[in-house]
Length: 88
Image 1 (tube, one colour):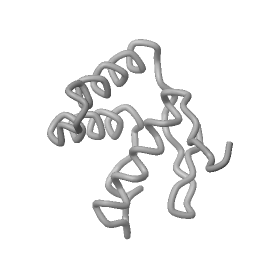
Image 2 (tube, helix red, strand yellow; image 1 turned 30 degrees about the horizontal axis):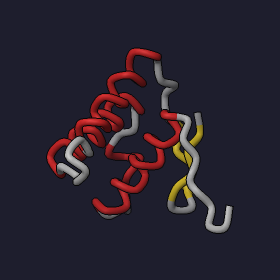
Image 3 (cartoon, one colour; image 1 turned 45 degrees about the horizontal axis):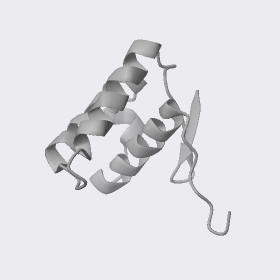
């Protein structure tokens, strides 16, 4: 699967049903109380990084914030979610 972020294309591994369920659970607990739990959110992003197969080399030249944005984009693709478009 190809994910586009920061003007680059990232080739990531396909995700299994079991992995998708695990990411869904991690996402749910990250926002369980209606507020973001930063530790749980970063656990989610780290799991996305592991599943995706992306490596440090893939992130060369990106800031940590940029890496988080890439991982969030991968997560969005994995979950089959689309971004809301203003006015849609």
